Length: 404
Image (cartoon, helix red, strand yellow):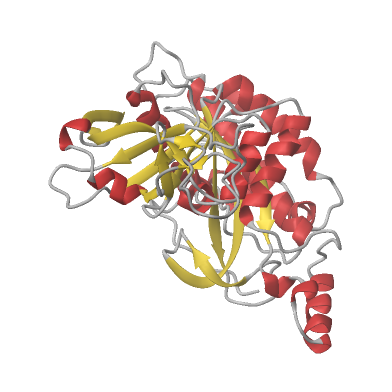
């Protein structure tokens, strides 16, 4: 609806615009590079947040569509999944880069029979998916985007993710290998050693056999939830992270230095595990903590900063709502891989434009009132010649699921 209003008001042919988004051969990388550049200048992100969102579909033809879990639905559905990186502060944010996740059923190298492989090859050809694009874990797509933006000259101060990414040891290792700090959510079952856990060669036992030649931890790791249960409640302090619609968001947190004990994590030269922060959220009156984060920030980082960054993920949820409900992110009508990337890139550019307008609002006006654009650049008023052609916008857009 909003797109139709804009098309009518500026006299653009709908079919030409549809062709431009769906099948025109322009490359998305140069456009995204400019989006990132302008976002860095306008927003000055405190962190980059990585997440994914679902694009509901009713048919099997759209590239990457499958029955899979989508956090935006809160359940398994017939959806595409887009992985995105957003630059965020406490007050503004914008998507920077995108990847379309391809499930195994869209990769002919993952199936067992020739018949199934042939079906997938035909499906991929219809969706114009490049031969080099294959099924990969979402965290690998995220790392690929970070590498791409690094080539463009942009590196995050810190990466923030939910548990879907934070629980992956290879993902955290990939960030560390690139010198990128992170604050990532993890499961309560995450194994850890305390930062001061004894790491040495075991003492001789007097028994026969080869003596220990390498140092090791002299105590078994524990799960984060068990570690938290042993902490006194006095270790938890009240901390706030943002102003909500009704009151300041506040809860009780504790932060301790620990050493994640995943087997696939790299070790220090002496064989010990690297130390980092374990942030624990435990609401008063709750039987157990609700959330856990690992953070590689400096040892003198205050708990308020750990909490602020751990909770700053709310900005990407805010972006997804605006991108979908206001800019039509999940209303793409095409069926090609390139078309999907064109669409999300154009929507991201529109979102950045709106974000910049907010940030350049006249400081003399009440907060939230943007500075007026020159008259020639404003949308048509009620007495504009095209006003009678413009349908009234609904106060709330209904969700339109595309049949393709």
